[in-house]
Amino acid sequence: MNNKYMLELAQNKKEKNKEFTLKVDQKRTIRRIKLNKVLQFIFSLSLGFALLVLIVLLYRVFKDSIGWLNLNFLTGRLSIFPHKAGIYSVIIGSVYLTLIVIPITLILGVSTAIYLEEYAAKGRLKSIINTNISNLASVPSVIFGLLGLTVFSRMLNLGSSILAGGLTLSLLVLPIVVVASQEAIKAVPNNLREASLAIGATKWTTIKNIVLPVSLPGILTGSILAISRAIGETAPLVALGVPTLILTTPSSIFDDFTALPIQIYYWTLDTVLTPEYANLAAATIVVLLTVLIVMNSAAIIIRNKFEKKL
Amino acid sequence: MNDNTKIRETIKNNISTNKHLFDKAMPIFFSVMASISIITTIGILLTLVIDASKFFAAVPLSEILSTRLAPLNANPSFGMLPLITGTIFTTIIAILVAAPIGLSAAIYLSQFATDKVRRILKPIIEVLAGIPTIVYGFFAYSFVTPLLMRLIPGLGAKNVLSAGIVMGVMIIPLITSVSEDAMNSVPTIIKEGAYGLGSTKLEVALKIVIPGAISGIVASIVLGVSRAIGETMIVTIASGSSKNFTLDITQSMQTMTGYIVEFTSGDAASGTTGYYSLYAVGLLLFIFTLGMNMIAQYIARKYREEY
Image 1 (tube, rainbow over the protein chains, first blue to last red):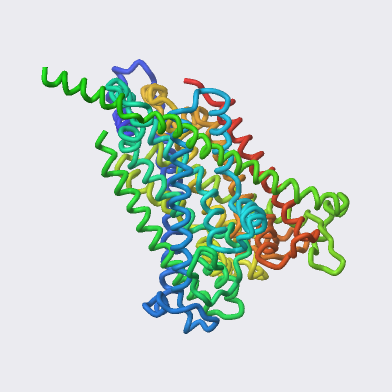
Image 2 (image 1 turned 90 degrees about the vertical axis):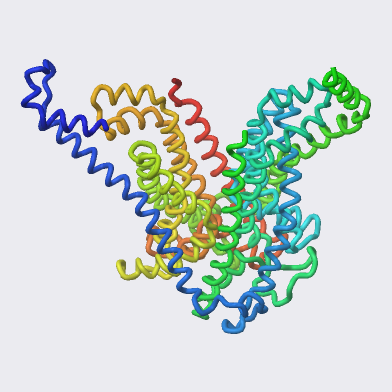
């Protein structure tokens, strides 16, 4: 709009010159407009680059997985022979991990958020916890691996079991759930709380019947994103010392395990010796990405569906 | 009348049904849960400091600052310089990729793109942010490295360059979203003032928006550096585990994070100096990233333009 007007101004300069006391340098104006266009194009290239990387990445992964990703691969057992290998136990490992991470992060994260937003008085303690959470969010994931290795694996003697891995991942994604839940609780209109308190409800009843139901979509969206982060996280699990090759399927949370990202890691490392492992890694990546896409779509649908309600 | 009695009844019910137990117990429960996050931080600090101190007690400082890293050698040496140069090089390359591209994307999205275009383009950045780092690692090793080998003869199968570039791609979304938020918070009224004086969009972007959002932009880059220092899987896979001290980015260098992964997944027996060295490296890493984040927060707060 603005540019169009200026171009017009420059082009019609001759006719309009008589009316304008302000002198417009035609050449300079045209140069400015051209520069604007050129740089706009250059800036847009950055997004083109991002799109290109994304397409190439997905194309490569899908192409490498063709012929390898089939029912046998999904239901078969791990094997050192590429053509026999399947990732059934790997999927089960990831499912177990998720089943541990979901309740722990939800209970810890939502409780922390409720405490900070509803109970904690504005002051020292609240700001300490808030700062602490934002700092925790920035701690590299491999450090959480060291924490898990020391506390869960060695001190609590859980070894490299599913439980140790799940607890470590829960702590890792906790800040995401806390921050998302805090935002959701903050967004609950105060008059709803006041109305509830006014008819004699206690604070806890208000939280249980008003605050939590209203903020649930926000909490759910944040939790799904946190869990999908946990599913894709590799470094802390590798740091726990998960063994390279596990041929059994885990049957309890105290068993050793392998999970989708770990298996991708080991197969990628071993492509030097067995080139076919690259295909197995690619096929596993397709499985992992599919899970993540489904979860993120669910988060987006929940967000869009409930966003308009309030 | 009917309504009034109903309300009175509700109030009576609410008061009479004794929920005092819950009302007293829940705040305590919640505060205990909230304290877990603080316990986690304390746990991380204690774990790192206790075991790292054993390392610093066993290894003289002159050895730590040397260039020879051979933890599993019969005559072990724990020079940390190879790890530090590896980390610095991958980080610099990543930022050289991520900062210009991430900032251009932010400027384009906040200044040039129409709402419709934004709605289509923004998800690209969000999807890039959602891809697990292990997938980037696979991509770096199986695609970017072979591609670069054609351009640069003598490039190692594991090298710093490819790891750094892909790590840069991974950081783009972080830089874009943080700096775009900062750019969007520059008040429209100032931008419209500039448009009213006849500025082009580019001039508004360069002379109004960027100066106004500079604290957020710098903070986004510092956060990017912090993320690059702490990133693990991409560098472990693509940059390899060479412990030689070198400044050649076409060769393999191990980063601090890569060292931790290699030794925890390997068989560093508990109680050896090699085992404690993990925690020393972890402590160093923790201090670096925490420092970067504090700097970012400080910049964002201190140099923010108040409107």
